[in-house]
Length: 280
Image 1 (cartoon, rainbow, N blue to C red):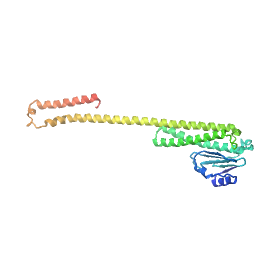
Image 2: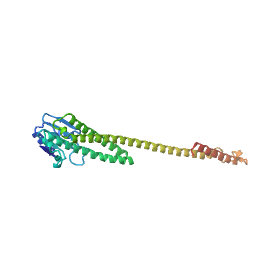
Image 3: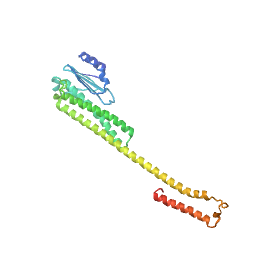
Image 4: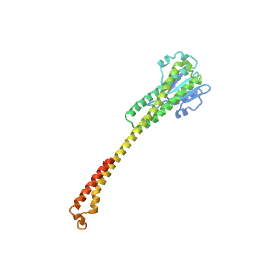
């Protein structure tokens, strides 16, 4: 008999009625996949990824006579119809509800991945460091969750657990494993893509910084050259001044024009020198 619950207290009460003696409250606190087989029943606990509404936990308690599901996922006659013959077999109900629940959990992960796909495309067009770091952290969390999910699917198949007889739904089960493995590969590829985007952004930023430093250096060169050129006549003037009385050599008819010519000559030579150096 399959029973589904969205109220945890009702779910826990029913579990106690059928003889489940473990502390189910702890399953709500842990953020990892839980799989444990007991003498008469099997417990599976898997979390959704960042649910926008409803519950985040999916807990299955599976036995030969009782199948309990705590989740916001509901399944109707249409879902069970294609497994109507499987449901009549031993552990058919527990196998079918496990497959349906695991497929819906996979759909939750896949929908979350589509959101990251769009974000990465946007980051390639317009890079934002904070957004990229946040996306990387969230995507890594999703990748870890998908990896645990794939390991769970493989464990259920390899351990030959009687409550989940994957041989009864072999095609659908293998298809779910294949899709989950493909999603895991895509998550890892996108993490590598994010690292590449971040690396390219760092290279661009380094180039821009170097260009700014180069431009600033060129400006400082020009300012230095202009300052030196302007200082030349001031330096000569500071030596000779305009005191003709105490510097009779400047009273000679040709002396003062010679000083002026010397000033201009030195300034022109300075301009030529700095131009050759590329400072002007």
